[in-house]
Every structure is written in structure tokens, then in C-alpha cells.
Image (cartoon, rainbow, N blue to C red; front, top):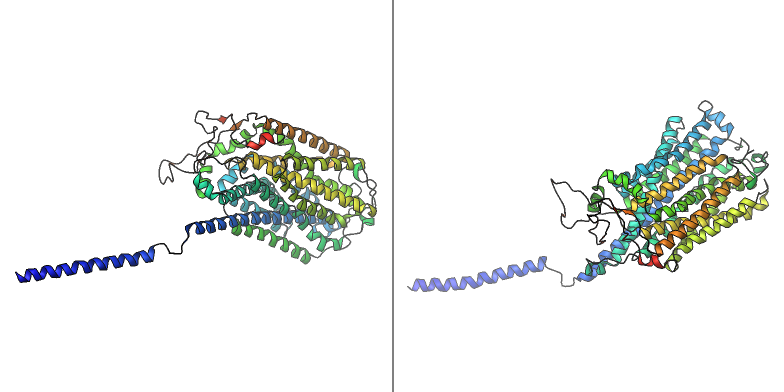
Length: 577
């Protein structure tokens, strides 16, 4: 009996000791995996979203730098090669048996004609690869064009020119979509607390307009520097081999508004000595390095525009729908009223690089000053792109109308003025016109991209809208390519008429928006997920209409289109006040 009592007493002593041991273990475990006493959840959250915002800024700067490098390499190489191939001595000595002049015509045809078909495949390309990878693919094809110039033959130059023509519209459409998405993501990361508190509430439609304005301004300020960088091969290399203006312009009789075609009477020999092949290879290698750097910038520094779930949802609406939606979006009266503005945007950029720079600048100052004329244009356009920031305080139509007014004055001036051939005293006036043209171009291009961002904020529509914009630009560039043989007065008249029509239709569009006229936008189909296999976030995915937009156009009762626009910002009604 005593043994039993002793056993019970021992058991009683063992139970508290075991309990104390368990509590000590739990305390140690809590110390190891529990929250740190100095941990501040709100502060860590702020740091996280600050890193996200810095990442968005990094993406915008990287995309702008990649676009600048890509276009400057393309424009600089094309300009240098066209000048070299124009010289008949160079052609006879180096390429006497391959008809280089005919190859150049086919190269220009491939670059200018191929984009006409881009509307058929650009949205499919962007949706299939994703926005970032479409940019990377296009920049890589531009690098391929540079590499083809190492061995100048028909089977290298012409196919690469056709490839460039195929990716011109996808490149700039994906760039525009990318910058737009970065503005929206930056807004989300700035207002993350507000988004958490109001998960189910719709954000105001004009909430991210400020970021759209700032990011598009940064992009175009960088992009217009490409016209400056493109002149580096000519300034540091080709100018050393050019004849002076008294030789190249000896037979030129008329300049400016009195000229026909592309600088008639220009001497067929422009090189006083032929550049060595080794020097040409060095220059082309430098351009190839810049193109490769642009590819690395897109690959390494540019983050994804969409989350993987969003990209899958955007892709899964069906390739037939993706093919049709750009055409269906053209039924929107806002886009239709902007078509003339898109067309003029294509006219003016190619005119300043060909018609103005050759028939006015080169005709008066000589080929050796062509680079400085285009540099004046590029510097002015880059600096004046920042004037679009006035849209943060002023109504959005003011920069566009200011740019149009500048170009109207310049077009009338050019229509009435024929500079004297070989007369250097006209240089200040020509540089001033180039700088003012750059100011108008900057306000035009930056203003259009900002306007499209304000009108179409839904992420499911942006690639279609920017595809339509750049496709109309490509059509305009193709038209300029076709009219190269027209008299200068006819070219200026067409441009002036297009600009007047563009301003009128734009103002009418703004008035209809202010009157809250219904628009006709196609319904974006809901993503169609597979019935087998892994189905992610079935009840709360990022599919169309589930991101808080509450679109009427996604209502199942309207299977083909929505007749009521949900994307009109409240401020649109007050733009023309």
C-alpha cells in the first residue's frame, strides 16, 4: 500500500515537470518562428510598395532607352547606307555587278510597304508572345537588319528589310501599351492602401491620368533623342568623305517650293574618297553593339507588363476574337475622328526627314550639314516633349492644338519660300524651322499617346488601340513613300489639308465626348479556360470585368458588342467646357 502511495506521489511530480518542459519548448518555438518584437508591418508594407514603384520607374526608363537605341541605330544605318549607295563611284568600284541601286529601291519598298498588312497580325503577335517579349522580338529583328549590312547582297538586305517592315507596327504598339501599363501599375502601387480599403469599389476613371502624362512624356523625351543619336555615324565618319556643296549642288537650280521630286540635279558623286572597308566594318560593329545593348535592356531591365494570370486570360479569349477586335474598335467614333490626326502624325515625321531636310536643307546648305539639321529637330523635339506636362494643369486639347498651329504656320511658310541653292546665309532660318518643327512634332506625338491613354484605360483594349494608331501612321508613311515624285507644292498642300481636317475632326470628337454621346465599343469576351487540368483562381481571376470595372459591355445579354461606353472619364465632359 505504501508502494502505491509512493508511486502516486512520483507520478504527481512527473506531470508538472513534463508540463513545464512542454511550455518551455513552445516558448522557444514562438521565439524562433514568431514575429520579431521590432517588426513593423506597416513600415515593411511601405518599403515593399516603394520597391515596386522604383521597379516601374526602372521599366519605363529601360523601355525608353531601348526604343531610343533601336530607332537611332536603324535610322543612322539606313541614312549612311543610302548616301554611300547613291554615289555611283562607290557602286561601280565596290558592287559593280549586283545592281545596288535597284536593291536599295527594294529595301525601301520592303520597309514601307510591308507594314500595310500589320493590322492583321500585330494583336495576335502581342497576345501570343506578351508585351515584353513582342518588344524583345522586334528589337532583335532590328538588330538582324544591322547584321545583314555586313554582307550587302540581295538575299541579305531585302529579306531583312521586309522583316523590319513586319515588326515596325508591333514594336511601337507594344511600346505604347507597355508605357501605358506602367502608368496604371504605378498608380496602383501609390494607392495600395486605398485599394485595400475599397476592394470592391471602382476607382475614378481619371485617377491615373497624371501618371499617363508623366510616363508618356518621359518616353517621348528619350525617343526623340534617337534623331540626334542617328546622326553620329555621319558626323564622326561619313562627313570626312563628302564633297563640299559647290560640287554636290552644282547642277541644282531650284529649291524648296519650286522643286519637284527629291532634289533634282543633285550630283551623282558625293564622295571625294571612298571609305575603307575596315572603317565601314568598325562603324557597323558599333551600331550592332548598340542594337545588341537595346536587346539586353529589354531582356534584363524591362519587367513584365502583366501578371501571368492576366496574360493567360487575355490570350484565352480566342485567336479569332483577337483578330477581329482591332477592326471592331474602329466603329468607335472617337477613334474614327482621330484617324486624320494619326495620318498627319505619319506624314510630318517622314516629311521632315526627307522632303524638308533634302529639298530645303541640303539644297541650300549642302549634304555635309544634313546631320546638324536633323539634330536640331531631334534636340528640339526631345526638350519640347516636356511641354506635354502642361496637361497636368490645362485641358488636354491645348498641347495638340498648339502643335498643330505651329505646323500650320510652318507649312504656309514653306509653301511660300524657295531658298537659294548653295547660300549658307539661310542656315539660321533653316535651323529655326527644324527646331520649331520638332516642337510641333513633340506636342503632336506625345499628345496623341496621352489622349489614347486617357480615353482607353482598360488593359484589355490598349494593345488594340495602339495597334490601330501605329498602323494608320504606317499607312501615312507608305503614302509619303509613294508621293516622292510629286512637286513640293502638292506635298505641302496635302499635308496642310490633312492637318486642317485632323484639327476639325479632333475638336468635333472632343465636343461629342463633352456631350456624353454614346460610343460603340466591342465587347471583350470572357476568358475561356480549359475544362481539364489545372484551373487557377476559378472564382476570382483577373478575367475581363472582374477587376472592378463593372462594364456593361461585358453583360451576357450583349454577346457581340456594348453600345454604352463605361470608360469615359468624368473630366471628358468638361474638356471644352
